[in-house]
Image (cartoon, rainbow, N blue to C red; front, top):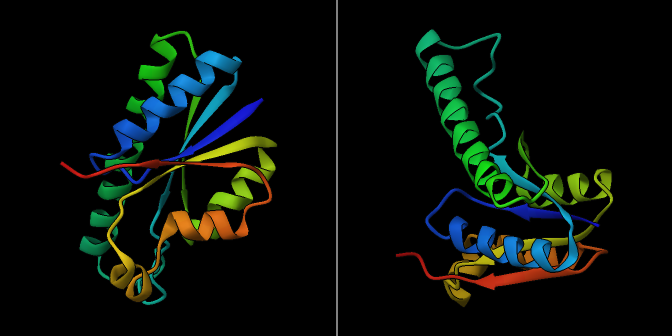
Amino acid sequence: MNILVAIDLSPASAQVTEAARGVANLTGATVYVLHVAEPEPDFVGYDAGPAVVRTQVAEELHREHRAVQAFAKELREDGIDATALLIRGPTVKTTLKEAESLDAGMIIVGSHGHGMVYDVLVGSYSAGIIRKSRIPVLVVPVKDS
């Protein structure tokens, strides 16, 4: 079985990855640690815009890539088959598309529990995954430190 664990690189990501570790240890699953980076804004393209903007975007993606790699490395050090993935795009749609392409049997996400007002105004990533996923979703309740 393949497990897709979606992390946002907040302090909660460690708790979500820990849940994936537990499931993988019980099932022998392969774990794909996914961070979906913000899609490129329409007004900032790599073919247009000042060099400083392109440099900042590249540096941020490089930092995010290293962070995702670190989570996957920790899992591998515990004997779990783990791969890090960094993909840009709309978070819910990209996560579900990746889960499908990896033939994932489960998606693991965290829920920050911001509250109803936040979810109505901003939206809830975990709620979007639950509503649209065709495969089981494990939601890890987390509180940011």
